Length: 91
Image (cartoon, rainbow, N blue to C red; front, side, top):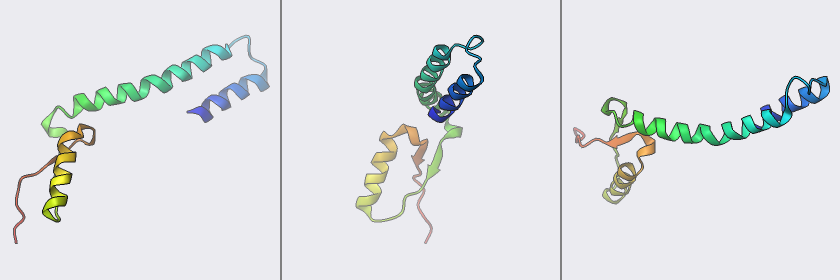
């Protein structure tokens, strides 16, 4: 995103079209976009993962202590969009 801002500002400077475009407006646009996109993405993921269809069920294999750690992390970290599946593996 910073590279895009630099390219646009350099093109405006080199082509001397500063009368048509304000560099301050473009800079503020990119700064606001840089701040608002992660916030919007976080809330969008929260809304999407409220639907049970969008959650991915996973089965964690390993030692019991490691499985407990992963189960705890999956319960606390909603951002991953994964839930622990209680199904047992067939041997």
